[in-house]
Length: 140
Image 1 (cartoon, rainbow, N blue to C red):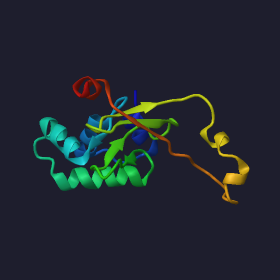
Image 2 (image 1 turned 90 degrees about the vertical axis):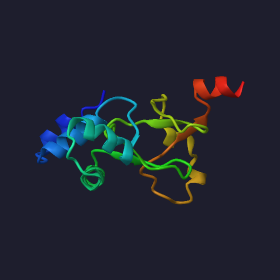
Image 3 (image 1 turned 135 degrees about the vertical axis):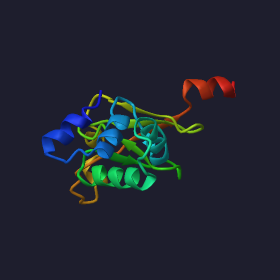
């Protein structure tokens, strides 16, 4: 489970009612909502919250490194609160469902030195693609 609210509190980030609601909507494991989905869920809790406030809050959370922006195949950006636990993503190529995965081993170790072309590699992003169980059943 994500600890987004706690991380924001520890940072001393001012948690207005609007910011708190956005953080609460995002908090959890395997949460990868679009900004519009965050807004739709936020207005259920705080009807006066504006779309602009949601977008601005998400942008601020990304900017301070507490939320990761995930973009897949030209679809709408999604927001991942699991910014401090190393992981990759498993993406359904049909419906766009995203799940966090935690494979064992160091993905950087699989890139031989001769394939780094002198780069000082600092980060690796791996995305696994396929069909989720629902889409696989529908395709069968």
